[in-house]
Length: 233
Image (cartoon, rainbow, N blue to C red; front, side, top):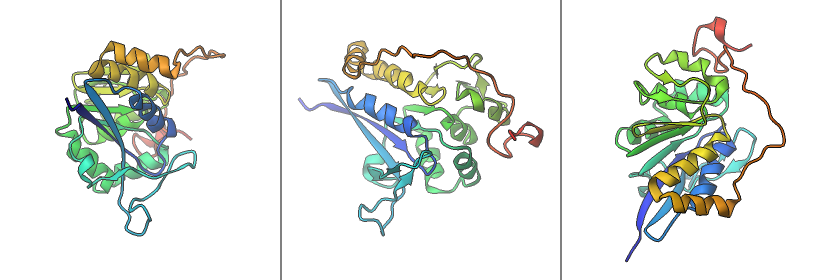
């Protein structure tokens, strides 16, 4: 019997956080089972001048990544889950100001119908900008909570949880929270045993050698999102 497929698309863009896209891809790659295969695609812009036909993306930490498919390719048209990653403040500022570019158009189109709409880190800002988080409980990176004041209909959950599920929306906290969130998603769609098997394979039993506390921020690192008096200097 042919396995069912569960398609996850991760739109990528210049300035994207590497762990926001690498962590879920790693986890999902271990999470297929005898009933359902998880297919993960990095989705980006087409570029006829590139050998691959796809435009390379430079992550926030300057790693070059080539998408698997373009925003218009068939593989990216009917995802079961859309995972929107965060990125640098400059990248997020740019994307919010260019709602008609390929990235935001793709998120806007697929976000209307995708069964699971998710974000990690500052990716929540892009979903909020498009109105997809209005009336939902949400988390994001603690340094960007102040930015969410620009979206008064979004219900920010206190105390910076690692992830929050509200109906078919799942949002994750800052960067590394994407690992916990991805395992949570695997458990939801593939079952506890598959999630535990992936956890064991990856030996994901974190015991950090250091302990610090989150310090809330009252300023927004993205210029112009909220009154200038609250922008970070």
